[in-house]
Length: 365
Image (cartoon, rainbow, N blue to C red):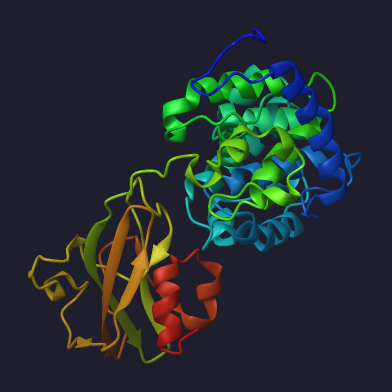
């Protein structure tokens, strides 16, 4: 990239900027980084594995949420070879509540491929990483830079925001993707990239935050164009709000006299696939007055529970009503995806969070 390149903002000395970012950010990071469980001993032979697992979990999910899941996951499967022997049902069980379950399935497939095709050694080659399930441009760059200290440019939301502000790129982040990508690649140092990649992401997470930027503690603030122009709160421009669908459904809680409940495996290919839940009706618009009791798994005296649950997905607001029935025996359901399960054995099944909430509300787990 030419150092004379001009962006939508005012001219900025790119050579000087690269020096600031490469040296100052890494110094700041080494003094201020968060002690996260995947940032362990880099000499640990399983260090790349921990980075791999963390990158799968951190997709679409915040650090605080991921930490306990990561710790439990690593305690159960401490290396690639042990993970490769796991079943999908086990993975989903440890993933329940973390969301975006395809990540867990892809992580298992990736571990199995690495275990067989790469003798259990996580590859550092870009093409090899991109060939693995669930690993795209961002994850491959993160693994190569953080786990192997390769020159690879990591661009997440934090990095985009830091660069957009430093260079005063007006507009939404998506409007500046080309410039941000070019700048990020230019700023990436040839050496010490593991610390640099984590440093620029950490700066966005701790200092250059979306709404409460702490410019007084920012190590590169003296050269930040947004700060000089008084534009920090306006850059980047806010995203357009997602118009969520408002849907409703009914869950059917059937309990028999031997303290078993009826659950079913989800078949939806896109949302919560292969997770287990209480039998449920279709999800319909909240302004649709259709009665959903007719979709119960069997005929019985179903009583509506007074409390409703509002459950939020990224693109859906779901209003759930629960109907309950007590039966004297395990009514036969002619569908292999339905099971009567003893309450004491429910922990063996990866349950969707909504079902767990309903069971907790009724003091069943």
